[in-house]
Image (cartoon, rainbow, N blue to C red; front, top):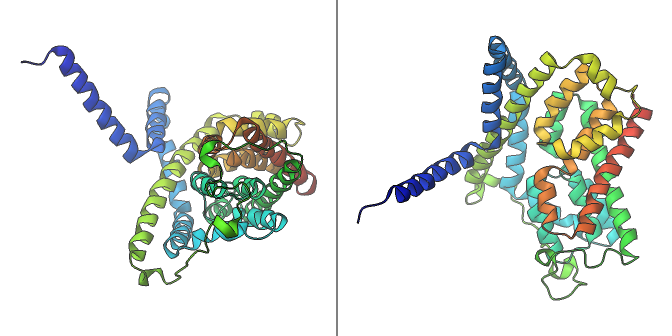
Length: 359
């Protein structure tokens, strides 16, 4: 029995869907954004296409040494198993756990995508919500890779301030959640997927929580250690390189086509609403912490204040799309609203403090 045109059309559709799915998985969102941006430039201002490509390529080459350093550091932590040391942040009494979780969150190598599986495991093992939220807020804001690239892409002072800000926002989230938990209003705030799996709501980290990690600093002596390191280098370089290339393309477009006086008037220090605007805009428009570095640097060159740029990055980092969607899958709306509130309130408080003390 011969196939009908409808059957052939359906088969062709499935084949094309598989092909595009495989391409998207291999290339990733940044590549498609780069291609779309290049095509848009070629159509609208073809005479400037070479200039924009040269700017993006030169900027990427300039930051390449710092990119490779950050990738090597993150890959070393993964290959040695040191990235699992985050479990120790939740040992001890709740107050100590919040303090350590905030500091460790800001210094650990977890990005917004890597935080959620860890948070899910911690919640499922019965770790209290307060230190988990402290870590969940602080961790996406800063990590060793982010620090190196921020120092290279903006300046070291900005990177240090952002690190301190990540710790402070974690503390705000942790201690506020601890106080609210005592009132009982946060009870039953977890979805079934994140509820303790050890059979008791009072499960402690020592009883059924994360186990003490095993770290092998000489990772090349461990079976599969070298492969883990090389795989991590390749994955991180591909991931960061694509996002930074897209970001530098956008930075070049901003510098070329956005009037500096408009940026200065809207997001400069003289606008009383610059910080709230940065926090509100940062949450829905934030794409990626690494991509934000050259974008914020370009806006600062156009006249945006340091405090405003920091507020944008803090609010956006804590609530980036991967982190927000992942956290939403674990908690009920009241906890998610608290999480968003911490991002907005924390970024604004830090922004006003920096504006008062630094700028």
